[in-house]
Amino acid sequence: AIRWTWKRPRPRLCSQPQPGSMSNVFKGEFKVTTQSLMGKADVKKLRSSLQAEFPELTKKALDGILGKEEVGVLKCSNGSTLYVPGDGPAAFFDDGFGGVYPTLTTLWRIPDMMPELVTHAPVSKFLLPKDRSAGADMMLPGVIVPPEGLGPLELGQKRCIRVEGNKMPIAVGKMLVSAADVKGSGMKGKGMEVKHVYHDSLWAYSGRKVPNDGFLADQVVASEGAPPAAAAAAAAADESDEEEAEEEESDAREE
Image 1: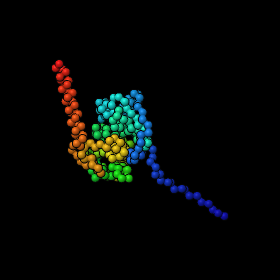
Image 2: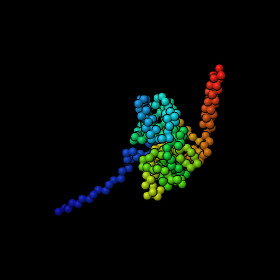
Image 3: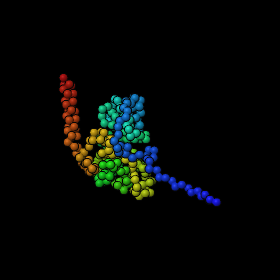
Image 4: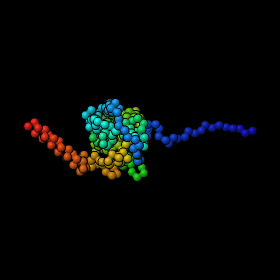
């Protein structure tokens, strides 16, 4: 007689990203599939949630970034949603899992609006997308821990990444570990899931701009913050406009 035996099947490793855990959603090209304008109630709700999550984002700062008028909603082929003020670059994005993050364009205007992780310049080479590589997530061994520590660290916490000696962020994402995890692992393993990074498709869609001369083609290095010539010219033009406005106001008062 044939004796049948039963063996417990081995669990298969899932290679698909788990809900809410997809790394850089802009690692590949994307297309805008639909465009619409947010209603006033939705804009108010968005602004309120952003200020609650990012305390450093004051009302005045948010007015300058998101604008006071219309906010466009761009649904994209990669599942993300872009929030665009008027005809400017995207200010915030939804990663497709309900998490809303500032774009690099926004972070370059308010670099201190969220907690950060600091890394060495050579590490940035691995974070940046190039050729067919989507760029890596932030590994804990590459994080520079300051004397005061990393601050309150929570699983899922949104943070940006910057290079030592350069104040401008190079990426934004969410933490994959808590303070207890870091203490237990001894700063080993993957620490942060990168959602948007310098040189990805959202950066390209936003105009391929750089905030200072430390942002090179294949890495980001230390910089004292000297802006590129174009940015310097734009800043000079803004100052000139402000001076003209002040002169006009002064003349009007004298009349």
